[in-house]
Length: 242
Image (tube, rainbow, N blue to C red):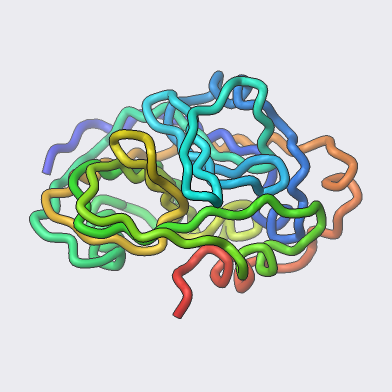
């Protein structure tokens, strides 16, 4: 395992997880603006039109029809999280039988449950189970939208996972725990990660010292009731169906 001295990094986020749970999908920021704040991250698009995957400064949209395309700067997002990635530590997993094992690998690299971490995984995956949200009408709760999301199974694929680990106390702001999106090395397949397995996967992690949230000024956000605890709905919408 390689390590180096921790650096000071900023996590830049647009909107909150609670707003997304409540169905606030109106575009609040352009990809061109997000690009100014980092090179690794994830999010979604206006009207919940697919999954955003940010790798090496490139922005990709994994859509519900299974296609992946690179985004131009004018595309709008209602929720996104991004950082400049320069990892503090890394480890290679000889075997990774499932997502739980992958998470445990990152657990060993994390030194606290009280700060945010940016994550990246590169390598050959024997299996990836992912999903992509469908374009959804404004105001439809996230749990309802997620109930009809298309799911995909990819086998024998090179690719990258990007995402974040969020402390439990920040559950109103971001998805608590691990949240990862996948894109294949040829940039043709991707989505929100539900499950995976592989061998020789390289895990990299970065501590985030600052947390910056840009709150939308859209009418739906300003008038929404965001007092409700989103944790249960987030777990149901973001996780693998049992």
